[in-house]
Image (cartoon, rainbow, N blue to C red):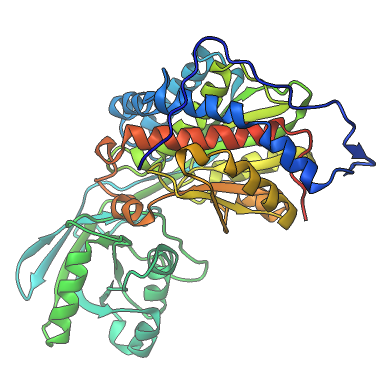
Length: 472
């Protein structure tokens, strides 16, 4: 993709962006949309300066290099683990050394689960050691494991139709992958549905858009009143192979061993830093990503990239000597992978000030070359965001899509706060998601530069406009 290069030398001088005109009357804007468009257009030079610094200037590749240093140092960062707490302490120090303001840790309680030793071996119709990853919060098997015949199904409907066959067996789900939201329900609910029909354990075809014999883990949920059974993910290849075997009438037997354990909730923190607003410091634009990950790979893509472009957004704005009218707040969430646990506790702590949140932003779908911004909010707010995105024409990232929700910002969006998330190549994202393949090798510094530029321009302009984004 070709980018237009803008070169500037020395100090950048920006035109004043506020005429001093009163724009609030009884809390309601008196301006026309044309006036708002004109205000946004005057940020063109600021946007170009941010893009130059992030994509072509001294800050290029910085977010990539910062991320590589962290994940190479501490590795994956599972909720409740020592490596997550080490990463939090490192980030707390990094943000202070970067010169950001109000850097602090907010205590939270988070789940603590460990997978332990695990294995899955097909005993019939042939001996085959299978790649397997226990699913988050799963119980373990007895020490001797569970050895049982397999029932292969492709859907919950098929499982119900064949319920009498499931009792005393290991249910294997070979659900087709059409998109993540449809397929992931088998990972989340598969153990419960299998337990309801008397299965001893469940194995889930990895929720992945592509596979090179790599299992993809993730959270699963038990249900009150339903027996808890061990559950794990297997590769796409093994799920499809067993489906073929079953269709030929072969008897399949698996021995599953899992040392998984759930421990009492652990102490942890959300990590917070700010650039305090110059005119409306009590009002907030929140940029975020989650610092925790699963315990495989390096957690570089999910969600190291999102966390580090969020930090980079504030760094870019600070480096240019910019201070928006309202506060830019960076939050690095903890225990997102367990269902937004840290984010929920943040919301409960801060929701009394919900009227002061103009926009909540979360990057948790990769930091590959962005396609645009996903947004959820009122039609008036969307129209404003579309104008802001026009400022990113120099790097050809101007589209505004629907569905800005994200696990960590949904609490705010459901309460009426506008929300945005970064959108890029989801096929690539779900090829590596929650797997051993989520490493720095997946990341591209040039693409991270562009993602950081988008994040910085959007967050700065929304934070500096005279008015907050309108709500429904």
